[in-house]
Image 1 (tube, one colour):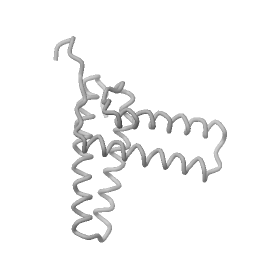
Image 2 (tube, one colour):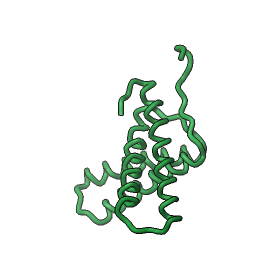
Image 3 (cartoon, helix red, strand yellow):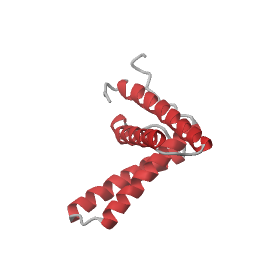
Image 4 (spheres, helix red, strand yellow):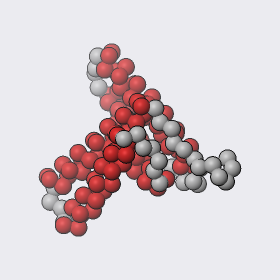
Length: 129
């Protein structure tokens, strides 16, 4: 890559949808935590700011914008990895129909594809994950 070329992140519609879902789940988890746990005002403000950043990233993805500052992608990387691991745990430990199992396996494949692309993109900026 020459100095004038800017690294780009290319995600398929399915991968973007997976990222949006992961962000939505995390936003809902943060909202749930702030509603049900007794947190300090500072913690609530910090969690609210975090949820707003995630919401902004989600809005960008919804409008097809995939240009992010590299360090802004670290939370998405962590969320996708967490989602993938949770799905794998469910697939390993739960009885389910063949259709549900296949759908879960497809989600894992999508998560793995997103993680590979994010890792490659972040490495262009010398960020190791």
